[in-house]
Image 1 (cartoon, rainbow, N blue to C red):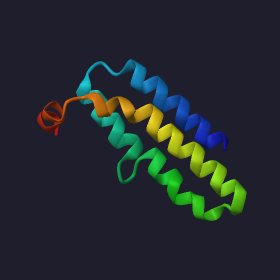
Image 2 (tube, rainbow, N blue to C red; image 1 turned 90 degrees about the horizontal axis):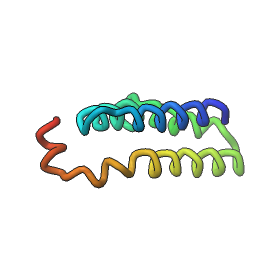
Image 3 (spheres, helix red, strand yellow; image 1 turned 30 degrees about the vertical axis):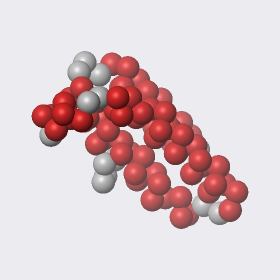
Length: 83
């Protein structure tokens, strides 16, 4: 649980300090990409049992949705230019 809270704080801080849309895209990859911090955490959920897995999974999903929902408002044409 502490690891998840650390990821949440780091992501929130990095998003606040992102200087431009390109940096936000890089952060999305760093946290939600194939080897991203949150992605790796999701892969560890299989090691938890029952209610603990549900609680951690819910919290990780909330972090993902809240912290990275900003990327949904960046026009897709800008995102295509950045990739």
